[in-house]
Image (cartoon, rainbow, N blue to C red):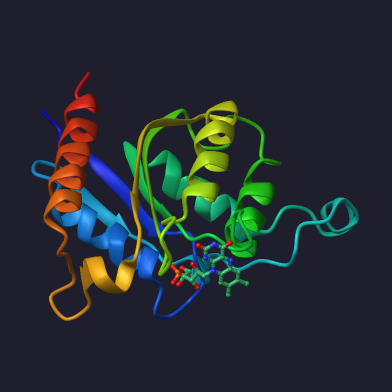
Amino acid sequence: MKEKKILVFGSSNSKQSINRQLAIFASTLLQHSGSSIIDMNDFEMPIYGIDREKEEGIPQLAYDFREMVETHDGMIISMAEHNGAYTTIFKNIFDWISRIPGSTWGDKPMLLLGTSPGGRGASSVLEIASKRLPFNGGFVKDTFSLPLFNENFDRESQRVTNEDKLVELTEKVQIFERGLEG
Ligand SMILES: Cc1cc2nc3c(=O)[nH]c(=O)nc-3n(C[C@H](O)[C@H](O)[C@H](O)COP(=O)(O)O)c2cc1C
């Protein structure tokens, strides 16, 4: 059977993004699939606006991002939370790719993660994304929140250190991966 390929990213343009670190760690828990890690900074585009779209069209980077989605079998995304919602860079990419005809998120399965330094672990944006993305062809299979990143993740070894959370994440990644076979 062909090896599955998972697209992995944190929804952040921070160079030190804790969500990027969590997404990469989650990808190391995949047992049989390959992964491609991408950086949102490589898909920075002008802020979406209807007038800009009419005048300048959809940026090539939006097509490039969509192609990344289409050439993978699923996604592991870790959602950074800004003011209880999506980061600007994620929403901007989302808005641009939603203007390309077809399924915005390619009708692909997603495992949505989220972390923050605080106790809620990006749970607001996880709720928003898990409710909305399915309407745009992003089939959210499960969510995982890691609160208190600095206590529960070791930056040196780049691992989740909280035992319960590690078990939960490992199970969720493995169930997600098994689901790709179906
Ligand atoms: C503009 C701004 C708004 C933020 N709003 C929230 C928030 O609503 N909830 C939260 O848990 N953390 C919030 N934070 C803290 C982020 O969780 C923290 O910066 C985290 O590192 C973001 O993830 P990243 O490192 O992957 O970018 C905010 C940070 C910034 C800069």
